[in-house]
Length: 309
Image (cartoon, rainbow, N blue to C red; front, top):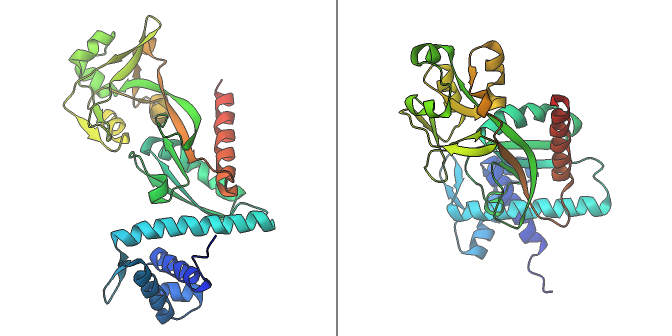
């Protein structure tokens, strides 16, 4: 195997990544205990080698070009893997450490994931956690994420998929809406009600509402003049304000139901759910911080499920 990277080049990559992370040559220089000129020379050396501009420079700031952003994500991941390999070989990492990047959809992030992170950080204080809250699918390789939580099984065979839970769905409305519009007593009644719609970001289509009828699941296409896109929590907010009926996850509205701010409807047709899946790339040597997080989340959710039985 021929040598492709000398010590100077590897050092230049590290300084480039520092400058990208910290948003400036001076900040990178301070962090690395070198001069800003040394950081600038390192970046220029990389740009000459690659034949592309990595930063757009102004008198006040720098920002990554599209090529620079792609190079940064790949280099950051490579440097992280090198550091992890060194820790595993030397046995110097008694506890998980380093950055952990997670992508999670809005409802699961706010009602499940974020409340857990304080306990996780208390157990593993050397792990820093960055949560990207979005309903769009991310690219692990291009965007540098360690884990993602999604609402469906992936088609990508390069990903490990662990089911976190089957989240129960519930049909709700506010007392004010029911006083105004009446209470549905059958699935057929949904056609005459204002049903708050959520549009799937991936398809632009409204999600049908699943119910149980005669022991089988049926998907009901509802209609309504109020819709939400991107943030599924918006439909629950509109229901609380008396805008109409909505089917959402029970964990989002369970406190509203307990207080009486929302009312559960058609419980005889309940019992449907949607899964949440934890995804991460296949790796022969999974980093300690990823392994620790996976074990932590699975154990906490399993404990929660046991207490709810």
